[in-house]
Image (cartoon, rainbow, N blue to C red; front, side, top):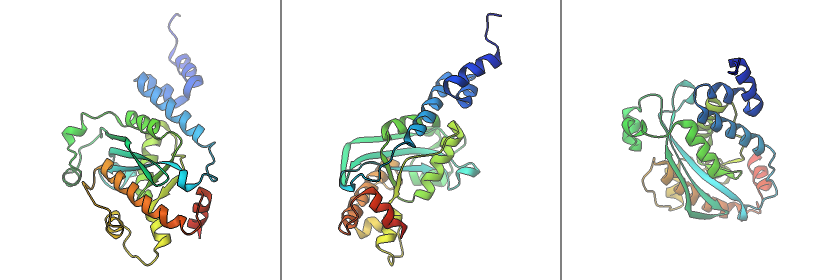
Length: 243
């Protein structure tokens, strides 16, 4: 037989990128390439140790997701990803990432009103796996910073597992957790409350890129305060947060 059998093709592709890309490539070779990239990227990421990096020089990416709800394991989906690069407390305004992602289902009306993203608009967006690859290419191996990591990390992990059978392996810092550690009696640690506390102008809330920019400004304020407490490296910060 001149044509490679299905089993033979699967084995050939398995050796090149793993069973998940192999299965997908039977239907979409481009998606198989995205999967292989994501799996390889996460494997390399696990080798990185950044504990000695000084916070004042730490290269990081602040990101935010907009989603159709609160439970990625019950069918809710990512509909946009926004991110901005920072170095220490300096925001790199020219280094941003933003993309809508194409959901499988309809966006609820209340989410459309909140985010301004309509079902019709999102239907024209790239598939989730394409956006994940582009996002990881933007992030590279830098630290990730977010406000309210429980929500965003769960959605990212769900998306990575659904598309590529891997979990997020980046170092991740949460402005909400850091604010709680530094201001234990504050009571309200929502992004809006912290922006108000630090007198950071709030603009276009619930847009993933603009929320990332505001979170980056909040990180700069928190970073300045925590460094005044002799927390100077990423390792110091993890130790500080563990108490």
